[in-house]
Image (cartoon, rainbow, N blue to C red; front, side, top):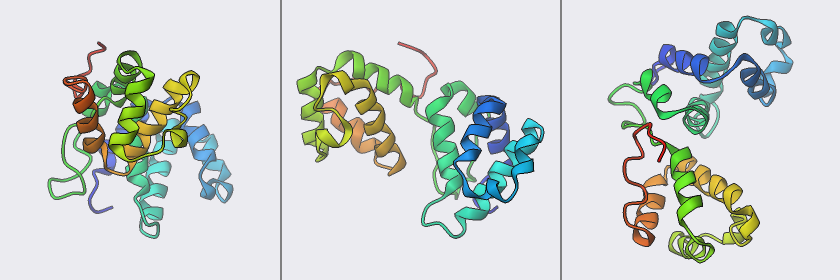
Amino acid sequence: MEGYYVENICRLLDEAFSYEELVAHAYGLSFWVNEPEILQAEKRDLTAALVQYAAWRSQSYPYSLIDELLHWARMKSPTAVYEKYEPYYPPEGPRVGRALNLGLLCARLNKAFTQYELLALCVELHVLPIRFGLDKPYLKLEGLIALIDTFDKSARIQELLFACHKIRPGIADELSLAQES
């Protein structure tokens, strides 16, 4: 498929996820109903089929399912694993740049931001806190995951990082490193 390094994406998914995780993700996709035997295949075959399906469906969907797979890998795997198989896009491809450790960002915000700062963040971003559950202290972590995920998927992660920096300068520094602070 044009615009992606499919082999690198397959290697990433193969290392980042267990066979069971790949099967669970595949069950959420409609084409597996037509080809249930692929779920019995070797892990590499399953990974290749998942990427091929995503590439094929991306031609008719309003967004790229390959980007969705890469997003899934970026959210669930360590930054070092994600970066190990880069590039996923050629220089003229849809996105260029280092992956951010979104899990680390979530952990930092969960630890550092008070409930009032989270509400201020929502005001700064022009989102309703109730949409993400950030209006309830007991849903703080789940709300942060949903907020970061939404902004990452909509390619607005820089806007989120800027707003976080306005509230707590430096909180999003060095997110491209695999360090756990």
